[in-house]
Amino acid sequence: MNASAPDTGTIWSWLAEVPDPELPVLSIVDLGIVRDVRWDKGRDGSPTLCIAITPTYTACPATAAIGRDIQHAMSAHGIARIRLEVSLAPPWTTDAIGAAAREKLRSYGIAPPERSRAVVCPRCASADVREVSRFGSTPCKALYRCRACLEPFDLFKCH
Figure 1 (spheres, one colour):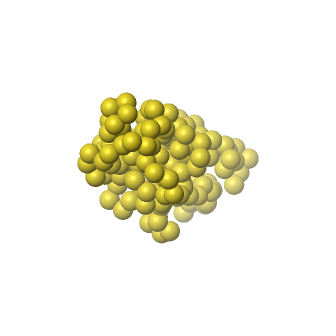
Figure 2 (cartoon, one colour):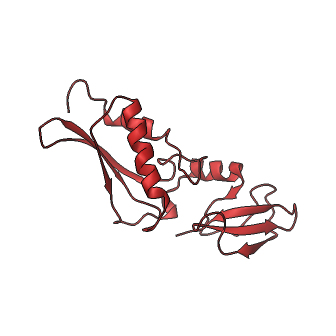
């Protein structure tokens, strides 16, 4: 956009440092909700950073917090003109969570979403688990208990 504006690769790296407010072990980039980063011209012709995000679901209460966190992170790097675009299409799915992010969830004690495998305990890897409640600490998670190590854990639901 201009010589003093950071390139979009740098912006992506800064966004990769913004934690998800409900899953602080993951960044908003790890979670796959950041869809696009680009420079546009504002109405007055000056550069405006545009960041497009897709919430994990339409009524996600963390969307407003994520927007504020993005604003703060970009302001901390000297970017004052930011336009946040919230897009619901195409919808976010758990397929947007990459392998490294799934491992971060597992290490944090949350079973990552797995479409093709049985639920396993993130602490001891036992498949001898049972669902305690369809809803865990947030609506996007279910509460499970491992019968082997007896520890409770959240399962990030597939969607």
